[in-house]
Amino acid sequence: MPESYPSASSVALAQPGGDGPFAGWRFEGITVRRILAYAIDVALVGVLLALAMFAGMVLTVLTLGLAGPLLGLVSFAVILVGYTTLLVGGPQSATFGMRLVGIEVRRLDGRRPDYLLAGVSVVLFYVLHVATSWLLLLVALFNRRGRLVQDFLCGTVVVRTDPVTER
Image (cartoon, rainbow, N blue to C red; front, side):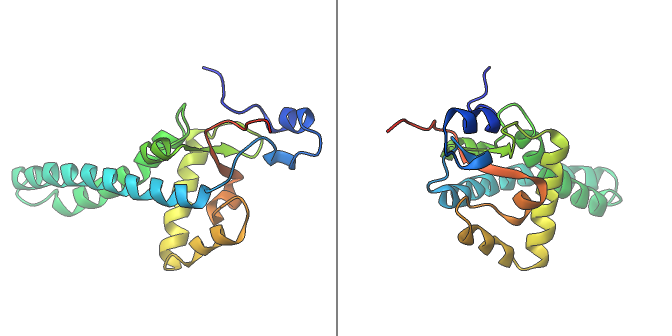
C-alpha cells in the first residue's frame, strides 16, 4: 500500500518554495481534529478498561483477592499505552479516533513512526501532561502545525490524511 505522503525532501523539491520538511502536508484545523480524535479514543479506551475491570474482578474472586490490585494497575497501563502504541506504530500510524477525523502521525522526514517511537510519544504525552495539569496542551495553540510537546521531543507531526490539492 503506497504512503499517502511522499518523503519530505521529494515534496520540497517538487514544490519550490515549499515549507521545508512540512511541504505538501495539510494542517488546517489540526488542533480541533486532534481534540476530537482524543475524545473518541478516550471513549474507546474506556470501553476496553471496563472490559478489563470485569475480567479483573472475576480473576480477583478466583484468586481470593490476591490478583486485584496488581491486575488493575497493569491492565490500566497496558491498555492505555498499548492502544496508542500499537495503532500509531502500525501501518496506518493513527488510532481509531484519528482515522475517523482524518489525521495521522508522521516523522518529520515523512516516514511513519515505528512502535518504539509511538510508545515513547504516548508515555511522554501522559507523563508531561498529567504532571503539568494539562497546561502543556496550550503549546498546540501557539504553533501553526498544532504540535504538542511530545511531537517536538519525538520529531513527529500530526497531519491531515486528505491530499494537498493544486490551486
